[in-house]
Structures are given as structure tokens and as C-alpha cells.
Length: 382
Image 1: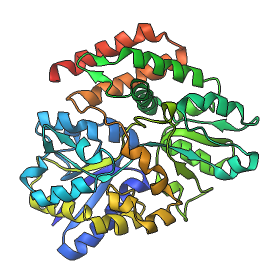
Image 2 (image 1 turned 90 degrees about the vertical axis):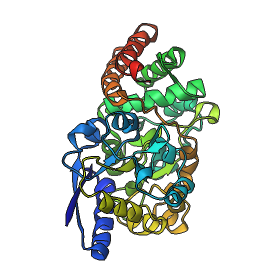
Image 3 (image 1 turned 60 degrees about the vertical axis):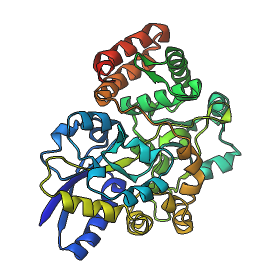
Image 4 (image 1 turned 90 degrees about the horizontal axis):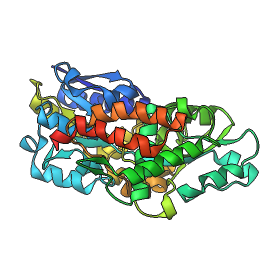
């Protein structure tokens, strides 16, 4: 028997799943083939385009409301025992476990945990005696302390400027920013102003880069010293990392406290069109076993979704301290809403925010436009 799954096209996204599938296949005699889609497609590709082609889908958590409303993914509580969910809840890294639930049913479970964290080229920083800021408000002053040719960078391509915008909104508000009317306008105006001010000191390529491109640039070059907000990738901090080894740390916060940054990560889901439901559930039980998460899954380039892996001494040592050094950020991360239509909204909103920041648009003018878009796509679904 052969079943199919789809993940995203970074080694963190496919290497651990292929390794676990091979291990599971030797025990069960079942072949699990993994296809990939781009990082942008991971966040934006409609679930409808995948459910007829794949049994297992690695998915972003804001899809849950959409998937549930259209019966695209299976509610896992109907197929897996309560004791299994108790283990997954106990293993949650921050709000990861609850992020894949919609109306008290899980349509995916976290196989990978992430949030926006900070990253530094410690060798460059140490050489010039530079310390990173703990407070988001101190970024400009920290940039002023860098010598010519050295920069702070943030991945701010449309998809990621949206994520940073939401992080700045929740740090400003200190709590939930979404209502049926949209995003808190005062927080949104402040976030847009901050991003516009950052243009004066950020690396000039920031507005073209996604996290992978920026981390590749940091590891290969010598111009980017620090990034305050990038989704973390252990692949760049491990002993066998290509290029210069990067050091990840907790992201700065407003006044150094409160909500940290936007939650990312990836969940594993089962298509409602799959004819192999029991087999898929067996693989989910296997890949989400705590022992598999901290061994096979991590060793093969994965960023586990289980707390026991994040607190494991061997994983910590091999990853250059990635897990211990960023765990606090994940534990205080902000979970986006999963209302039906949200993924379509954020894809359109990302392009708008990217354009508004580059143009220096007036937040008082454009925030009502953003919220009108939200209401037109999502309001009737709440």
C-alpha cells in the first residue's frame, strides 16, 4: 500500500517526515511518499487544492476554521483516543496544540513548533562589542551602534511583513487585536509607523527577503549582524550547519515583557477525501510519539512540535542552544485567529501592508481600508 502526503520545500519541512515515514514503513510495510510545495504556498495555497491529491497534509494553523467549515480535513477526535490527545496537550510548545483546534475539534496536531525569534551572528557582534536589544523600541538605537556596512535585517517580503505587522500590533495592544470589525486600529497605526521608521536603518534587501533567504544571507555573508524577528530554523544553528553557525535567542518585546511574537509551526492533518484514514491515523500516532519527536524527527533536520524535544539536553547541545534560548518566546507567542476566510484575507492584506510601508502611507487612512477588507471576507463567518 502507498499513501501520499504534502509538506513544504525546505529540509526542515521534508527531511524529518521522509525519515520517519521510512522508519514507520519498515515496521508496517506501508509506503508514504512526500511531495513538497513552496513556503509561500504553505501559507497561502487553499486546502481545496490538496485534499483530493493527498492523504496527509502539513498545514498552517490559521486554516482550521476554513477546513472545518468546508469539511476538508478530518476531526481527529473522532479517530484517535482521548489518552493520545492528553499527551499532545501536555507536549504543547506554547499555544501550538490549541492553535489547530476549531470549535473544540482538532483538525491537525503540531508536528513542528516555531515562532518569530531573534537571530545573531555572534562572531560579528562580539568582534565589535555589540549587544542586541531586549526591547522592540530600542532597535533604532541598536542599529546606530553598528559600524558602516553592518546591518540589522528583518525578512519583510509581503508574507513576512504581515507577520511582523501582527507581532507589532499585539505587542502594542498587549492582547488580542482582532474583533469582528477587524484589527485594533490604534495598534495597527503604531505598527505601520514602526515599520516605516525601520526603513531608515534596516538592510536594504529586507523588503525582498523571506526568513530562509535572510538566514542564508546571514550564514554566508558578513553584513547582517542581527535580526529581531524571523521564524526560527534549527538547521542554521546546528553543529553541521552550512556557512557560519547562527545563534538564535528570544525576540525583543515592547518594554521587554508581555506577548512575544507571532506563532508559526506546522500541523499534520488528514484529508477528508482519504480512503486510508486508519493508516493515516497510525502514522500520526507514530510521528507524534515523544520519543520519535526528539530522536528520528530532530536528528533528520526537524524542528519538533513536542516540548520534551525542546527541553532535551541532547537537542539543545546539538542545536547550539536553539531550543532553550527561544522557548520563552514560544511560550508567550500570539496565535492568529482561524476564522473561515482568514487565509485569503491575510494573503491580500500582506500585499497591502508591504506597499503601504514602502510608500509611507498614513495609518489613519489605510487601517480602515484594511478592516473593510477583513469584514468583507471574514466578518460573516465569525
